[in-house]
Length: 77
Image 1 (cartoon, one colour):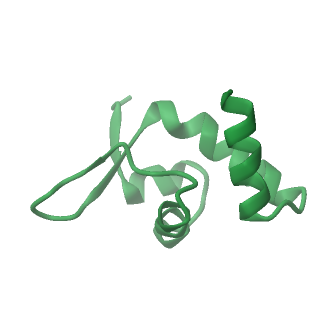
Image 2: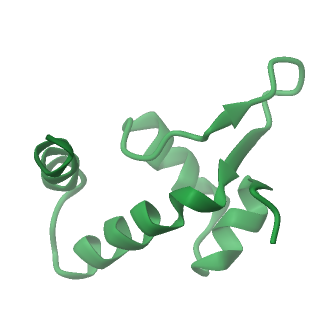
């Protein structure tokens, strides 16, 4: 499996839209690992899959994006 994926490829892994990933980027919740300076294309790492999975599971439990962001900050300490 590739280490870097396009936003579309990464979104397909969890059956979400690329727009959802763009929204998470705007919220500073899940930033792309790399953004091409010339094209603006976002690329994600397979190593970000676990974080995306956690975000989606917490959303299913009813947590807001703000709460999830706080959760990630506290769990990273």
